[in-house]
Each structure stands twice: as C-alpha cells, then as structure tokens.
Image (tube, rainbow, N blue to C red; front, side):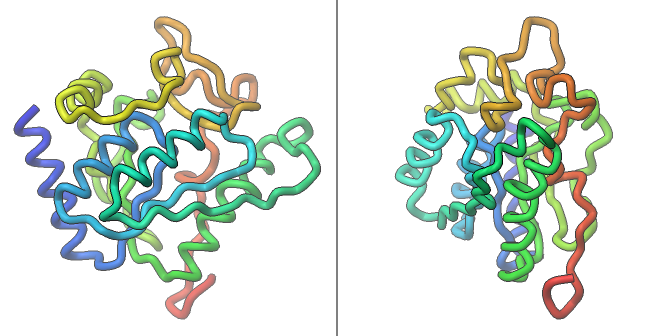
Length: 219
C-alpha cells in the first residue's frame, strides 16, 4: 500500500505542476473519496466538480455535503442538470444522461477553460476499463492516478485514513449513479453491473464523450 500511495501522490503532484487549474470530477464512489483525500494531502486546492442531475439518491446529496464540510481546502462546485419536467429516464435514458450529466460538465469545463481533469476511475472497477491509461490526451486531458488500485486497496486506505463512506456502499452499491438506473451489485457480478441494467451500456457518457474545445473556448 505504501508504494501504491507514494506512486499515486507523485502522479497527482506531477499533474498539479504540469496542469495548473486542473479540477477533480467525482461521482462519489469510494474511489472518489480516496482521490479527494490523497489529492488534498498532496496540495490540491482547486475545484471538485459534481453534477446534480436531479435524480440522485438523497444519501448521495448528503454525502456530497459531508465531503464539502470535511475538505475546506478545496472548492466544491455543484453543477445542475437541465431539470426538465419530462422524465427522460423513462423514454430515453441515454439522452437523460447526455442532457443532465454530460452536457453540464463539459459546458462548465469549456466556460472555465479547465485544462485537465483528475478522476478516480480504476482498471479494477469494470471489465471494460482494463486497458485504462494513466493519462488520456484530449481537451481536457484526463489523468487517472488510481488506475492500479483494487477495491481492496481502496477499502484499506479508507479505513486507515478514517474516510467517510457513502452510506449505500455497504448495501452493495459499488458504483453510484442516479436512482432510476442504479441498483445494488449482486455477489460475483462486475462492479458496474448495477448501472444501466438492460440498456446495453455501463457508462453514462462522461468518459466516452468525444466533445472537444477549440483553443478559443467552446468547440
């Protein structure tokens, strides 16, 4: 664990030095809690971004408030979804993600001209993420300092650092999302099996989004 933590901290310090103004994005999974803690301890004081789609579990919103109070060094920013009265998750769940989660984040990144994102994806978190790179070039650059962490590593660090835990995690919600499209993971399932059941996808679209920005701003 010590070597893993040191390597992660070194990658975050590199990111802070090479990408001034970078931000953290989080869906409030256990990996997100670990990333915020390690990053703040490494000197991060920038923005932590969370998209409130309007469909989160109440426990998720309470947990977000808890983290805001715990890490006063960072700037916690809540981005709001479209807030349409139409329940898109019933008719077109993929578009629901696009307008209520993906668009608010990428529009904000463009307005703020944020050069890079630290995020908490790990190779262990889904079979589809096994080839995840530590740095993904793009606009913005995506930096994944936790790629080598396993669920066991995350839980060990959380316990050692006495980090708060999303209250639904122990009920089997290993990947947190909106309540219409998230369920607890059953024994033996892929960690993201509880996301978008029956929709032939495991991602909301944030990390598969190909939207880029022009050098002058929104592209």
